[in-house]
Length: 360
Image 1 (cartoon, rainbow, N blue to C red):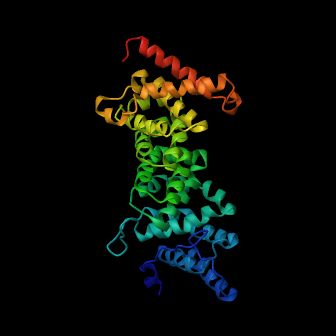
Image 2 (image 1 turned 60 degrees about the horizontal axis):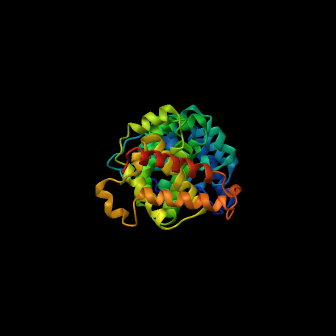
Image 3 (image 1 turned 90 degrees about the horizontal axis):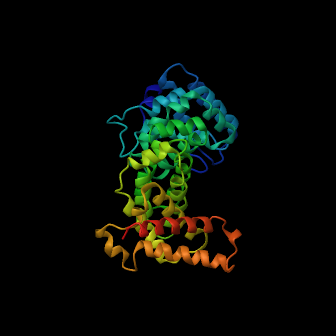
């Protein structure tokens, strides 16, 4: 029986709020099964521990923190880590994760979902070692429950300073942005963005964040509707960083992504967005001018068809003038958005300096 369990394949468990069982079962039967799980997990061999985990997915309740705490203590994160880095074999290979990894993420995400156990997981040094396999798995083409479990585990790591550092050392922002481009489901995209907000922090991880900016610009340009609008403040927040290390790392990315930012901003300008949206449009334009010079705002010749409503610079200046006039005439109160006036004035100043200096 032990040999059969150790070499069997465990299917992914897809239940909420975590991958483990949430349905009611007979207390005596359930308790006997859990006791057997703990006994196996405390075993000395890998076969016993793996068999115990198989039984955990069949008997444990997702919201039973006491039982899950015993499971965590018995199995240890060291064994979970070994499952996570186990190579696929012909018997357990799938299109994305191998089934050892599925098992590891099923159980680990259950620990991360429980507030009573989350801090224990975060404070375990072995958990930090999982940063690399976590990031590697982001590119494994997963979806559904497997991806949800992975993102829950990464989010748990990303909410600590040491976890952020480890994830960024393994280039998590870049891989998250690439994953965001592949997914169309709004809930999945929201989960990815939630993790991204905790790792794409330019002053803490300048190089890792900078190399993700071109992908962020690509997503910003390609997205439609609210997805584009949701990416706008993230792009503004990242570009607002003035730390020298980040600016140098951003300059090293080249200018191939500048057109994506121009095109994305242009589409939003054409839609006549106002309020906070317009301020963020102007902020992005200002930050780009500050870091790459006013020439950035002049489209390349091949972009001409994208700007048939007038040049990008003209539209920017037009909206700056409109915002400033409305506030100076008190049609809109300056306190409604205190950034509007200084951003508009700074952008006008830079543009006028460029134009009077011989720019076209």
